[in-house]
Image (cartoon, rainbow, N blue to C red):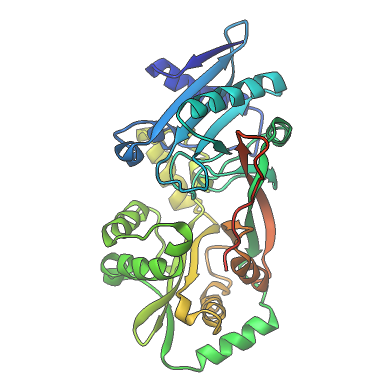
Amino acid sequence: MQLIEVTTPAHQKEFIEMAVRLYKNEKNWIRPLDADIEGLFHKETNKLFRNGAKAKRWLLENDKGETIGRIAAFINPKMKEKQPTGGLGFFECINDQEAAFLLFDTAKAWLESEGMEAMDGPINFGERDKWWGLLVDGFTEPNYNMPWNFKYYQKFFEDYGFQIYFKQFTYARNVQNVGFDEKLIARANVILANPDYEFRYIKGKELKEKAPEYFMTTYNKAWSRHMGKTLSLKEAQMMFAKMKPIIDPKLIYFGFYKGEPVSMFIQIPEINQLFKHVNGKMDLLGKLKFLWYKTFSPPNKMLGLVFGVVPEHQGKGVESAMVVEYDKMSGKSDFQYKTIEMNWIGDFNPKMMRVCEQLLAKIYKTHHTYRYLFDREKPFERHKIFD
């Protein structure tokens, strides 16, 4: 076997194409957009490089010169852990432990040479909302920017010595004719009887001009202390601008108290139902296919991105009131979306898990994020539980 560092356009293309060949007979695998993967490894399209991030990629060939594996290793200076921790990701490999371990060894050796003392994987070279974790249960079609892999990968990671750092759950439920937990409804009714609270979706001029501000305010109060960063108005505006081609106003839902945003439920149409038809490319043909399917066969599944309540309104039933009010619209038979999936609920976030359970949602998929400590005598600690 021979390792080849990815350094040329031909290598970059092969990094993408080897996965296409590997999964060619897997009906539930959906080819990611090529640009979504390749763009992560270029300074022009990944701002982490401007902050001192580093990355390397390798291909693994067999004795016949055929690519049988790939891996990326990277250092994200924004990752703050007890020990310097790098990442590995975009791992693909034939069902061969020797090949898989060689790829892991290669990533580990480079990270050690850069002063790292641990590696997490498989993870993204960027934010946690994309390409994060190893799929271990629920091998149905993936949601957009969520990883899908062979079942045998789990054995590779665990036999190598990776340990579970945390689990990520995707919850799912039907939108119509499900109902809610009785306790949830009781809490909701208390809030809904208070005229100071208002729950509604955002449309028209308000969607364009005010929704990013509402999102920034709610996110920074509800999530920033857990995620380790605050969001600027410019970043929120950029996020909404990127989502503009797929935004459905009825999926952008906020709660207000005396006119101030205090909760949010942000969803998008599950666009892998569209992207699976474009074969990884948003060239002219890909865009035409995307628009055709968006128009004539639109998604019937919505994807929950962010659900949050600001701390001063937590524990009062605001989250319950928000979903009960939303159900008055989404529960109608003519509502376009028939199912909802809520991605990326970490097992370190029991509050959010309870919310999903009260919505009568069920765990539909499970991903593992693993950690490997280079000092094998060092005690292993799992991710801190959110309070």
